[in-house]
Image (tube, rainbow, N blue to C red; front, side, top):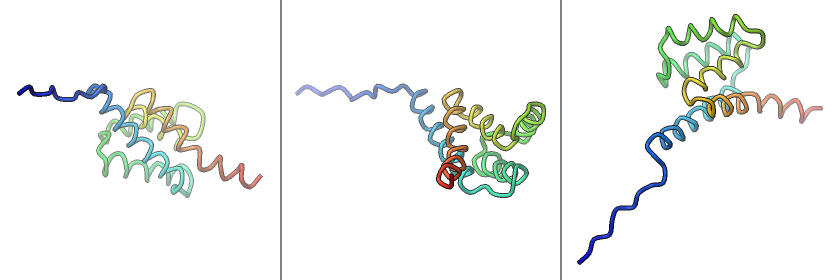
Length: 114
């Protein structure tokens, strides 16, 4: 009796991990984009709670370093923080997913009201 070889996934372990990280980034960015009200200070506090305390993506030092970086470059700090945290979690694909899903709810609301 011949045994059939085990079915192997075409995705490598790294690809599966990357997909998992992208899903995490997508969920966090979309939640923050929909639920974060109160301006950049509130957004950053909520993001800190999510990525540092709850999900343990970054250390306190890493989070503060990223916050320092966002204070050096022009633009909205909270958006930049979501983008940088997304990049740290899932690389370049995470950066794109995090950016688009964080900005999408506000952009959709503006377009719907225009």
